Image 1 (spheres, rainbow, N blue to C red):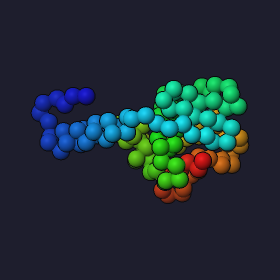
Image 2 (cartoon, one colour):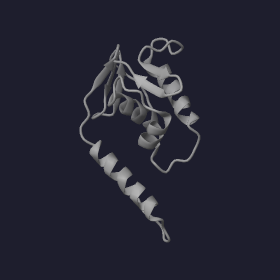
Image 3 (cartoon, rainbow, N blue to C red):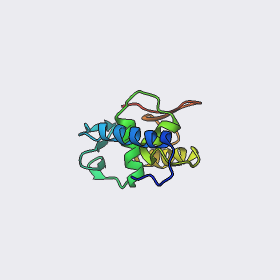
Length: 128
């Protein structure tokens, strides 16, 4: 990451904070299960009933971020920051689209999810 001149000190501070935050969370991650779906972050794999499930890099990072905080409601802004990066200035609905795609891959019934839940007005949470 780099900052071009001239730069604002607050922007530099925000970039440094984001890099430090990412470095702290870059340690080994524990695997977790969502029913018959097993997620192994260290291997970069998602398996459903022993079969590999193809997830895009973004979907996988989103699933791992939710898995690192089970039961905790994560806002769209938090997920945008952690998965897409602090400098992403797009629409928060991007998270909704990826959550919907992820549900089709890991939920038995994506229309009535049991693991990736929407908390209205707040964000999303993962229930193991």
